[in-house]
Amino acid sequence: MSVLIAGCGDVGTETGLRLAAAGHRVIGWRRNPQKLPPQLEAVAADLTGDLPTIPDDVRTVIITASAPVREPEAYRAAYLGAARNIAAALTRDAVVPDRVLYVSSTAVYGESRGGVVDESTDPAPPSWRGEVQVEAEALLAEHFAGTGTAFTALRLGGIYGPGRTMLIDRVTSGRAVLPTEPTFTNRIHRDDAAEAIVHLTQRVTDPAALYLGVDTEPAELGDVLRFLAAELGQPVPPTGEVSAQAGSKRCSSAALRATGFTFAYPTYRQGYRAVLAGEGTRHP
Ligand SMILES: NC(=O)c1ccc[n+]([C@@H]2O[C@H](COP(=O)([O-])OP(=O)(O)OC[C@H]3O[C@@H](n4cnc5c(N)ncnc54)[C@H](OP(=O)(O)O)[C@@H]3O)[C@@H](O)[C@H]2O)c1
Image 1 (cartoon, helix red, strand yellow):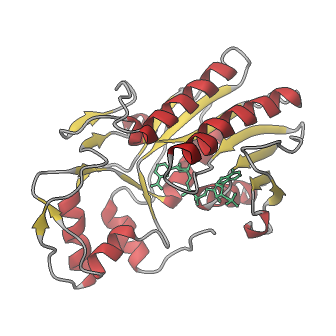
Image 2: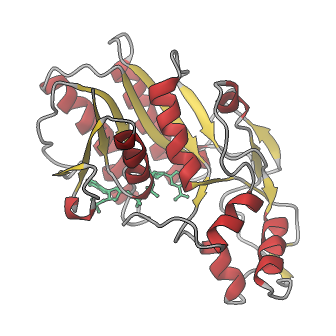
């Protein structure tokens, strides 16, 4: 049984390594296949163009591409265009996978007052970034409806992990600012994101169409920054205006946990301690 990972970067490679270790043949598609480790079958593919032939024993397709730049056209190409092309390539090659999992984002939600968000919450994207994700999810859901392929969207919160140290860098460089208003943020360690993908595609018999992929504790940004400052032996950052681009929401992963999934890093405290201890590496 083969697995195809389209847009195989940090999360995709970690997922692929776990699947390969479990005995699967894993094919990784990306524009720079030389960056993939030897456990993965590396194939050069640009998801915005003509796609390579899909082997007919592919039973799982995982889509983890990310846009190279934060611009609307790049987003549309990397998410919506890629989703359309992958769906078309499966039809072209008459490959009917059992599972297709699309990695989406909690950026689809518009909540900004700290309310709870879960799979029953209607998306209300506050920006074009979330809009593109909603469109890509819908395109894939519609394409696979009634085909025998179970389609799942996994909306991840902010990914942190080895080498993904944006908040740590803010604290160490003195650029961190504690928000004046409570601002809830949601995150997931890269390894838990990869394991959730493995879990949903390989272990859950009847997956739902949608899961939120966030750890077990929505956290106030100020608490996370204070925690990091303490761990790093840095002064408490000053308070000030913070751009509320990601809104303020408390995303729930109760549905993911109800499938039997357990987090290696249930909260930012365990996860950031592992990052600060130098555990793991970011996949290029
Ligand atoms: N960053 C976050 O906090 C966050 C939050 C929520 C959701 N997500 C989602 O999580 C997923 C995984 O992210 P990640 O951290 O693993 O990203 P990443 O490390 O940047 O990997 C994405 C991969 O996509 C490939 N790619 C980009 N454009 C492509 C194209 N046109 N054709 C083929 N491959 C292409 C890139 O490889 P090449 O350059 O070699 O092509 C890259 O390796 C993405 O879907 C992202 O949107 C991220």
